[in-house]
Image 1 (tube, rainbow, N blue to C red):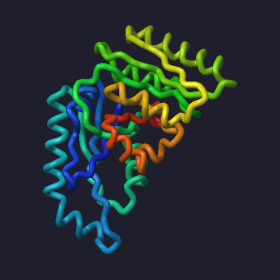
Image 2: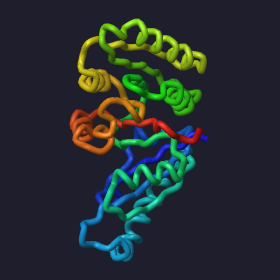
Image 3: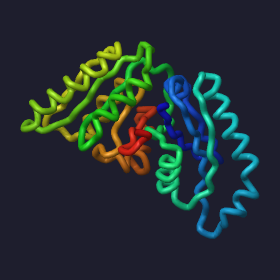
Image 4: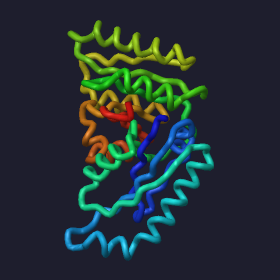
Length: 232
């Protein structure tokens, strides 16, 4: 079964957008409630002080997902390294993707980015499982330079054929000789959610750094990041 890890800053009141909640309906989800500790605060002290409040908030988020028919559970972690914690729990739960919650209403169309050294077959399988039999359209996006135009067009066509075989409405968008991340941001603005591969350009900053804040600022969300090593 396809599983998505949903990290949330649980003591900061981070919630799940209605769009993400509905989007995850066909898959399993693990909500990772994390709290980044100051250097001087021992984890045991934080757990004693905050565990009950954090657990109650996590149970509310899981109940919200289960209302949308998603099978969900939760983990609670007090950590000094958010990135390392997310990577560890994703591996422990064999998650196929991470989710950046964002803010979104109904998801009618996904932007699926295939730029960079990403596992295209894994991304396509994940998208097919995520959409299942729902009427959610897909735009496959790829940025390349002129020398890679023909190979990129062929890759898009092959990926589109794979999704079309699942009955999914698919369009393609090939961006030539433009900055890949800027082109992705521009394309994402016209979509309800984004799917991207783990090794895509700027991914680590997309998930963990300033770019995520930029995406949130530009109201592009939610973002699902397909892991290079998921449950296969």
